[in-house]
Length: 289
Ligand code: GLU
Image (cartoon, rainbow, N blue to C red; front, side, top):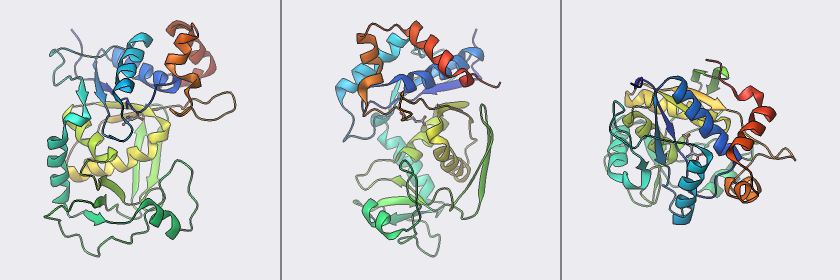
């Protein structure tokens, strides 16, 4: 009998081939779920219609299985188990978005990425969204009642507020709203939810108790904690895994296919040999609890 009080998830995006870094994060998610005799849910994060392709979806499932990852498929896990596809959950995200609108903390924004990049002088990392300078932010927090097509909607972060959480691997993490991240998009001009909103809505609805993800998402976790709070949802625990780099020190990305699971498999590598290499190269990836 499993301890269904632990519910983890694998949340891959079928926007390219999965690489060794994804495999390691998912492997750790599986390990954590097994250590707690909990269950693991698969959720395909396929909201970005411009990048999702059916062949990536098929490859994703096949590569995950080849690597030895398994997820729940039955009803016996103390709650909904999926597998899920975000693209089939639009009506549910709309409800969550409307709930968020009622807080008065969301505003319509017509700035393009280019407008934002050109209007700010502060440097930002290549992976990080620049801090939104507030051009469209209204003075008052008046709830929006009519959503207009063709507009992005942003969540207003409380400037200066420190978001703190204890990560299962990294310990205490602190980020300051307005300095480390700014007002962020929760709903897109094309009428779809942004990642931050969809992931909070789903992790809450799927009763996830611990989110295991890459360290590149630490700032997203801080943003999401603000959403949990204003939506009145209890937040899960978090465990951020180290990122994997190639031999030149560059972070693995879907753009670089060389270390894709598919390519490694075609070169004759086995999941066992890859796991051995991962634990040899990155012994620090093991959990602290
Ligand atoms: N779908 C995201 C990715 O593939 C992960 C999202 C998450 O862990 O919240 O990077």
